[in-house]
Length: 216
Image 1: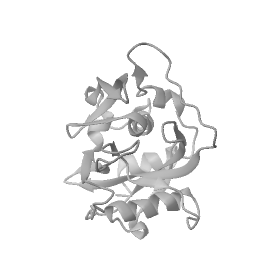
Image 2: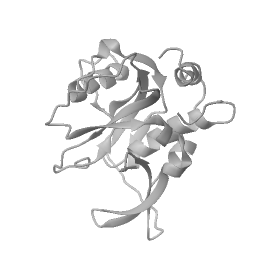
Image 3: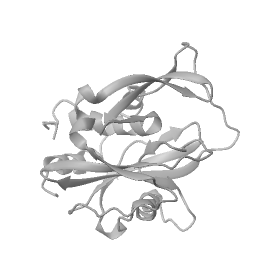
Image 4: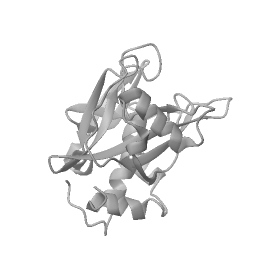
């Protein structure tokens, strides 16, 4: 895995200036009415982290997404990346991402090679500032989901993230507000919102001029 072109590129690229908001904006949902959507908070955002975990299987790269169980809350029933809020015991946000991934889908943090991170992302609806950490494992993990937090692990092929034909739009009703939502059609699942915006930055890096990668 260390010699894979994607891994080599990310190990060099993540330490340089990132596309950030430009990439996020490509997948930002907007009210179908044309009005501007604004969410205000009186408290500072709470820190958290997610992990984009790359692994190889049958000659292609994948990364896990999780389907959350349906529950009362802003993220109930959604598809996202493994991760969560920072705990006092976490040395830093990279450790948050690794710990949460272990708790949610059973991946041992000691086998994860961290490549770096993407631009911190403010999830306005829950008021979290999320650090998207990028890493890889040498062997395909055996996923052991915590069924209180994870209904299903979805193995998303990286090539679908990089292929523009998998970017689509739909209309979504969120608490009575109709949104036009760009999304990634990953394994026939609608991946939109904050997760899509963070993944958009990864896709932008891997497909920018000079990257020299094929959609694999």
